Length: 247
Image 1: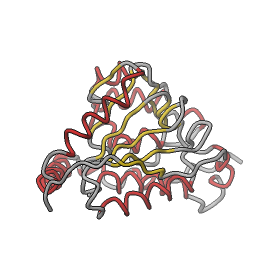
Image 2: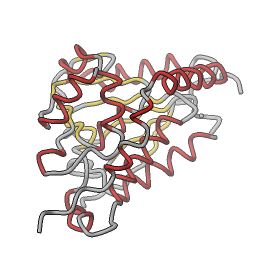
Image 3: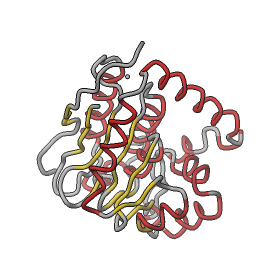
């Protein structure tokens, strides 16, 4: 098991540098024989991630900028296509792009008091990283509309009731619970896990409505402002995939 930690105080914002670091980590771990399962988590008490780095927003509003939505969507697609199981542990805030990445993970474990949502509407932009496709598939179209249209977050407890996360646990237990699941999976045949994941993903592709294809690609950019062949022993490791330091 390898842990990927988003570490960018104070709120682990999904800046372009963080997204690029996560992509690099996934590319490396995909072919790493010591990694059978990946566990994604956020550093610090504030959460997995509060979402996009708002300090980058002014540049994103310029013509042809498009960088944040495209980066988050590309990262979510890579998480979904990662050949090994990815578990995400959600504590504190899991907002915007962070939720879009979590939706692409295989198993989601949340703290009961986590705050989970897609708040983009509140600043007049759209979820551009696959949220409008993946969220309805998980919670159903009505609940997805409620979350996306209102921008209101839900708790980890409510997320478990809606099927958005597989389990909601006490805040102090979220990382241990996710790690225990990761160790259980890492003890299985890595080849079998990879085949099962590929089959499940193909089934999801076939069952997804065709009209959703490419929908988020039209929503990547915010609108302009008006005017891991066989099983092997689990070796826990830690990877700081994202850049540290305030930004």
